[in-house]
Amino acid sequence: MNPDSRISKRIAKGEFIITAEYLPSAKVESSLPDAITKALGGKVSAVNVADNPFGVALSSLAGSIALRQAGIEPIYQLVTRDRNRIALQSDLLGAASLGIQNVLCLSGYHQILTGSPESANVYDLDSIQLLAAITRMRDQGVLLDGTKIEGPFAMLAGAVANPFLRPMELNILRVTKKVQAGAGFIQTHPVFDVPAFGEWLTTVRAQGLTGKTVILAGVLPLRDAAEAETLRDRYTDFQIPDGIIKRLKTAGGPDAQRKEGLALCAEIIREIKTMDGLRGIHIQSGGNEAVVPQLLAASGL
Image (cartoon, rainbow, N blue to C red; front, side, top):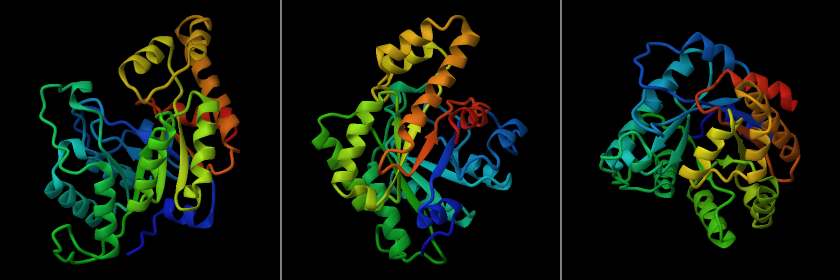
């Protein structure tokens, strides 16, 4: 059964798509905070709800329901690090029952990079296998063991790609497998190195993949040079050139560096948004959702 979510319709119409991010924290909340609703509501096509990327937080499913109740279309995130195939399929059935129609499939950061390094990981399925499972549930109406799903299961599945992974052949192989498994859209890791991203997008387009899925380029407005250095040193998916860190450092104090980080991100968006094969932008705010409308205005989106 095909989903009729807002992002699905925009994909079908060939429109430019803007998504953003909601990063839950370790809070018990019955509804979405007003500040987040104000920052995200009506500004973007859909909003990712992070699934415990750095440690224990409000669940992505609960956050997705809160977004939906606030009139904001959610993209439910599902990390295979913490769940076996039983839990993954059960959570997907629950999400579909609650009206969620978009899901982003991820393997997740290893637990040693989170606030719970002593945790045991699962990785029963990887993100590609999860994509294939969702495609089977949607198109064939059955679970992995062949059990028939009672009722409609309509879900648009998406994936993540790292444009800076090398060698390029391995990178494209992973993207190809995700598309073949059913990824209807792909959000990339944050772009800081525009030429390297352009090289990747050109290769993806040459392989015919941009005609089979929708590529959304990730962007992240950096708060300051210290954040940039921490992200680059701790997480391999943050490829931040020395020139960007130097520019942040020479901007001045904390407020000046924050403004420079926003300006840098807006510049990157303006450089990449017209690239052939790119269908949208995904704004990663790192928990600072209030920056989203500022970035949209500064970049001309």
